[in-house]
Length: 334
Ligand SMILES: [Zn+2]
Ligand SMILES: [Zn+2]
Image (cartoon, rainbow, N blue to C red; front, side):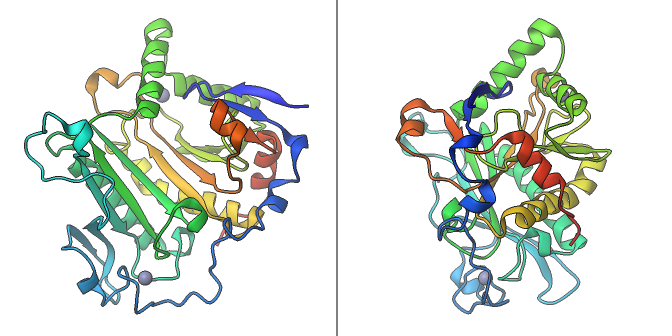
């Protein structure tokens, strides 16, 4: 039996159709979905993100030092093939057509073969700190209104370089999907004087059947109206309007939570390609009571078809409840 479900936070609709296909862990065995880790060396002489290949990179924006060789945890460089670009300063009048903005790459580790769950706590912490520092810096650049922070892992997820990295795009306007989410949150607050995400979380934690993990700071859950099999959300349990500001506690715990979420995914479907996106909330003081940031981890197990293109609906061939059960059932320790 299929079900139409609407995500209360984004307003987007999904068709949950668990009878439609095999279970997700049986769907993923395609070339595009799986990251080829086997035989990947720790260093690749042709990889611009590997240590010693700095000459292949644009001039460095930032480097976070580490104790061990090669002496750094993370590096930030401008994207060589930016989605948006342009010098800071005045926002050109035709900014929407000129593609004005800022596109940075965060090289997450000196190791060519590692993904986030393979890093030690200090390396992972350096990444979280780099994300927040760059998010704050790019947000403050003239003419930038919104910042998108995301990771594409594996070819099927759109990654063109195998070496672990994330990207940050500063835009001169808030893109429709984020704007719509914020508008819904503000409208809900106006009417009910409560944060929509806090309410949603409360309902989910009470119901429990889509909860994967519950710590003191973050909840990990499969969304009610997932956009794909085994989607996971990482949401601060206490109201938290702004990713870049977040509490000290959030800052210290986030890395470990992300590592566990990816490990759970790995243990259920293997090394699937995935996207990780930060829905950053808002730094506008007027939005504080309504905005609530979160991270979405979405494995790329399916290619959208004509129905999805036509309707904007995501067809999900597994149920969020049984996905949560699978993800809960594995040990997320390294
Ligand atoms: Zn590399
Ligand atoms: Zn909230």
